[in-house]
Length: 76
Image (cartoon, rainbow, N blue to C red; front, side, top):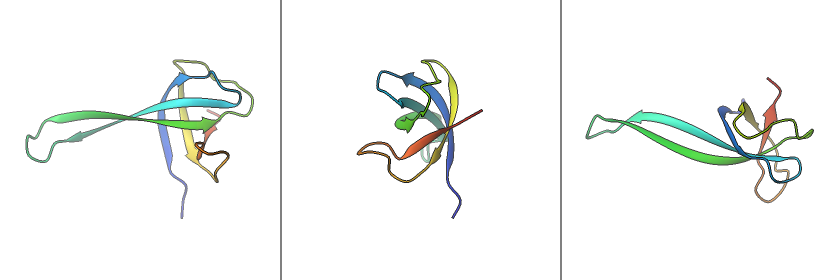
């Protein structure tokens, strides 16, 4: 099964080798037919601490690195 890849914006890089990425998705509400924006935060592994707040990054699924990290940043 292929690994999922998501694109989002780095919202925090406070922790060592970890970034928090906010991923936004848009969809049409089934009843109201209005476009809705929802976002979700993922914690991703950043080996070299290369990314800063505001950077657009792509993250990919991986084996668990810690209690909360299940994603890793792909070098753009």
